[in-house]
Each structure stands twice: as structure tokens, then as C-alpha cells.
Amino acid sequence: MTAQVSNGRRRKTRAMVMLICFVGLISLSSAGGIRISRQKLEVQKHLNRLNKPAVKSIKSPDGDIIDCVRISEQAAFDHPFLKNHTIQMRPNFHPEWLFDESKVSSKPKERSNSITQQWQLNGRCPEGTIPVRRTKRDDVLRASSIKRYGKKKHRTIPRPRSADPDLINQSGHQHAIAYVEGGKYYGAKATINVWEPKIQQPNEFSLSQLWILGGSFGQDLNSIEAGWQVSPDLYGDNNTRLFTYWTSDAYQATGCYNLLCSGFIQINGEIAMGASIFPVSGYRGSQYDVSILVWKDPNEGHWWMQFGNDYVLGYWPAFLFSYLGESASMIEWGGEVVNSEPDGVHTSTQMGSGHFPEEGFSKASYFRNIQIVDDSNNLKAPKGVGTFTEKSNCYDVQSGSNGDWGHYFYYGGPGKNSNCQ
Ligand SMILES: *[C@@H]1O[C@H](CO)[C@@H](O)[C@H](O)[C@H]1NC(C)=O
Ligand SMILES: *[C@@H]1O[C@H](CO)[C@@H](O)[C@H](O)[C@H]1NC(C)=O
Ligand SMILES: *[C@@H]1O[C@H](CO)[C@@H](O)[C@H](O)[C@H]1NC(C)=O
Image (tube, rainbow, N blue to C red; front, side):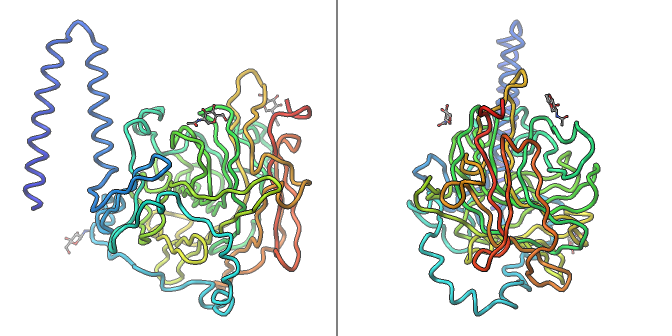
């Protein structure tokens, strides 16, 4: 079986090589023609690397194709360090299961406003497979280069109290966040209000996420990120999508969004990374939120992720990271947009709901029950939460705490307005 596949590949490659020679011959006078067909070949090779053979494919109403890929055939296992990896089908340790079991089982009320993914309307993946959003040719072509597809373009970590104005400006990235630092953190949790912010230009985005950060803000910064985003460049539409990101070198060579490189090992058969989530909240309308928990297994050292109350998605193996191999040094929660308008005019790309924090519930977006996993592996309310925003007239943040919501904050804004030009 394996031999047949590779024979087929070799034959295909030979045919391709002949095709290139042929194209080269007929278009000697037009270098552009050769360049275009080379690029086509590169794109196809990249698509073959990303899109693994599907046991079943499901067409989602939003235009996505979801491939059900055998767990052991997912892109993670292209990584040389994972050749002999034994997949862990469940975490050995879960901060809530151990310490909050009664609460988890008595929480069905929270599911009334539960969020799901659009593709699930049209089918489910068979057991033993995971749903993977298929990468299309156009997805890759929208990236600045094939190599950069699925990776962040700039360093985008919000740096509270940074004295360096260049870093505050961060090539147009703006944030409104809450954060804790100075301790050793082994995870973080939040329940995040879900909206569909308007994006002014396709090369801008708006996201709401948590950051688990390790190391200083140098070239070897480690980061694990998860939340929702609207990113026309990455996905080709304005839908709100579940996403993750990781890097172990400040976004240079390592890491990517979702499953777009080897790294994250998915075990969950029901939730697809990068797929649209719905419904989204409406202004003065129904409110929807999702909880995201990321925690470190104290024994194996892997970083696990859970979406909602029911879905353990999978894990980032410990070896991917340096600092995060031990613990995180900072946790951040909040929103980020990129402002790429020329000539110093501010973008009207929205953060959160597009409304300022002071408007409050059902108008402004929120994070509630923000928690950290401390060095005894307990989920705890964070101590000494700070807030940070570059330009509070464009996007702002206001935090608080009460019995219902624990530590929470409202964040976001419209971007361009009379006080933010
Ligand atoms: C995988 O296992 C084989 C056989 O035990 C061994 O030869 C090889 O070095 C291992 N590879 C890695 C990356 O650990
Ligand atoms: C950020 O950049 C803008 C325009 O490039 C500039 O006017 C502003 O002063 C910068 N902000 C800081 C804090 O340096
Ligand atoms: C996304 O939204 C922008 C404006 O908000 C619009 O111009 C664009 O056509 C939308 N893109 C898609 C693919 O719907």
C-alpha cells in the first residue's frame, strides 16, 4: 500500500518535471510563464503537505471543506521528533476535573447559549478521525509567500509598560488587554464573548484570545494563543473562527495558526481548528460566549487545550518549547486588531463588538471568569490584574470582579471615530 502510494508520487513527479520542461520550451521568450507554472507547482506541493488524505469530506454551508483525517495521519506527525510519538488520547491531568468536578456536572444551564461550528450542520467525522479545514489554493495565494502562509506577519505580543515607542506602535497592531505577570503560570482560562467585528480591509484582522507567554520579549519568546478571529487574509471571508497559534521563537521560524504546520496534536473528532463558529452575539441581542482552557500536564509537560465544557481538542507537545517547557511567565487576555491604513489615518476595523467597554453587557464584548493555573495546578482567580491599551480613544479596556463573573473585563471599540483619527 505504502509502496504503491510512493510509486504513484514518483510517477506524478516525473510527469511534472516533463511538464515543466515542456512549458519551459514553449515559453522561452516569456520568463513570466515559467515563473507562474513554478509557483503553481510550489503551491500544489504545499497543499499536498497540508491536506492529508480524507476518510470523508464534509461541505460546510460557509464554503469550507472539512476533511476527516485519521488521527495518526494528521500534519503534526510530519515533525521528525514525532515519528515515534505515542498519541495521548486524553490528558492525565485536568485542573477542573480534579478540583471542580461537581461544578462541571451541574452546569447544563450554561449550554443553552452554546456555540457550535457551521460545518457540523452537514455531517460528522467518523470515529478515529479528526476534522481538518481543507486549505484551498486561494488561501495560499493570498499569503505574502507560500512559506509565510499560516504564520503571523509581525511580532504582535502586547507589551504593557514597554518604554519603547516603536514596540508600542508594533507596526499597526493595537491591543486592549488584561494581564498578569511575575509568577509561574501553568495555564489560563476565560469565557470569551463571541462577536463578528467588521474589518475595513482584507489585510487587517480582529481577534479576541488568551496568550500564554514564556521567556522575555526577545527572539526566543514562547507563546501559546487561542481564541476567535476574523481574518479575511487567512480564511477568505469575514466569519468568526476558532483559532490557535504557537511559536517558540517570537514568530520567526517556528509555529503557525491552527494545524497549518506540524506541532499541535489534535485528538478531538468534533471541533475543527480555523472553522467558523456560530451563532455570534448581537448588539442588545442574544449573547454567546465560549470558554477556553489551556493547561500544562504536570507529568508529561504537554500543553493541553479545551474548547467549551466538553471538547478537549488536543495538545502541544512539550518539546516544541523552551521556556514553556517549564512554565509561563505571563498571561494575557483580550483583543487585538491590525491597523494597516496608510498616511496615519486610523482604521475603522472593530475590536470585540465594535463598542467601548462603558456600554456594558450585550453592547460591549467581555471576557469573564478569567483564571490562571497556579504552581499547585489549581485554577485560581488571578492576582494583581493589570490592563493595557495603546490608544484608549480607539479601543479600550475596563476590568472588574463580582460573584457571578469572577474577574472580568469589557474591551474593544470602533477604531476610527472623532477621538481616534
Ligand atoms: C524511532 O524509533 C526507532 C526504532 O526504535 C529508532 O531507531 C529511531 O531513532 C526513533 N526516532 C526518533 C526520532 O526517536
Ligand atoms: C505611533 O505611530 C504614529 C504614526 O506613525 C505616531 O504619530 C505616534 O506618535 C506613535 N506612537 C507612539 C507612542 O510612539
Ligand atoms: C468582508 O467585509 C468587507 C467590509 O466589511 C467587505 O468589503 C468584503 O466584501 C467582505 N468580504 C467577504 C468575503 O465577504
